[in-house]
Image (cartoon, rainbow, N blue to C red):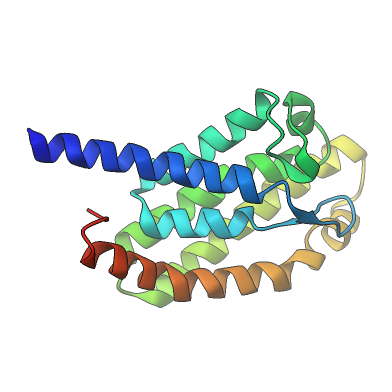
Length: 183
């Protein structure tokens, strides 16, 4: 029974730590038009490497719920349901499919890096699709215009974050396992 309790405590602690890391990093942004550049996606990618798929999705869900409750964890130190309902809210909610897809691919194909890369690219595509669709609905922008304003400026940065996660994720996972901090 002790091992089960230790693993449960570990899982809850890591889930809370990733939620906290997203909440601390996401408000610090670089404005690139209507959608700011944030380190939050990097934390989502890393959560997929270091947590089980369920715990990774729980961490992201908690982050979104903290922001929806009004805590200033979204870009620009803002929060509230209004941010989710606004033009960029689809990108925040898009963290959920991003996380789910990444965590499923990484959880299943961890030893095959190209499949992990594919999962992160597909997850990022789902994030872009959800955010862009919501942006178009909220602003009346055409899909082409929304892609130019809300997606193209982020492709290079997200590629760098994916690369960083591909390099850091396995190393962090291995080191945490060797120290007994990862089950």
